[in-house]
Figure 1 (cartoon, rainbow, N blue to C red):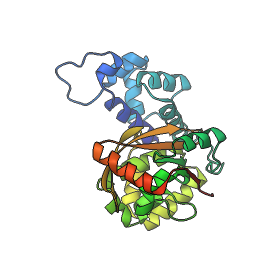
Figure 2: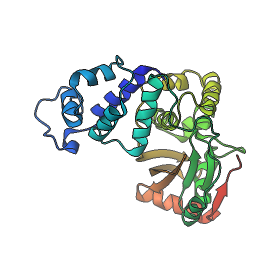
Figure 3: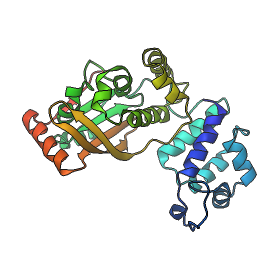
Figure 4: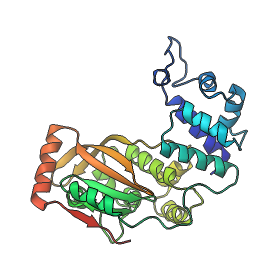
Length: 282
């Protein structure tokens, strides 16, 4: 990661935060989106000049106190704070906080297994930090299986999205989904993580510019909730609300119908195949 990624992250988070969320008046004249630098400086106690140098990549080594103050001012979540610290350490040439030397987590914890069992009739998938599918409910298999997302012994959702021609048919908003999934991939690991490096090098060759350009863009904070459109071979177009939950080096993604037609279609799919949990051997 270059030092500019730290600045881009701070700028993107500042511009994505509305004044009302931090108790500031919106005001009639705002030429730029989100908060002004002066407003973040006031909230954090960091000078405007120093914040400008950070955003422009002219300072690469902010102190932990400065990072904590900016994280508080920008209302960063725990995951976003880890990403901020990783970007800062990478900009300064130090190792990141994520366990890059450790292999991605493949074990399904007992509590997670119990949760997935309770979600038997709900599409839910457990992913490790590089996007490998660790486990999923059979309801998820009903949803994602026919489009090819869980094929093979160790499916990876980013690999599927960029290398399988079925992915563009399955996701009408492919460009937006690709942006989001790459953002999740980048936020989960340091660029020095050898397991991420291996995946990135393979995708750079196989997927080409569609993947390379996204990896080269300024880092963004992945969304924790949203709506995806999925075209299912049997059920047609589905509108799925999703929620992302952190689970100690893994992420649980739970899908729910966002409209009545999708709810009926999902019920039909699950009813015809049954529920349960499927672990994927890593």
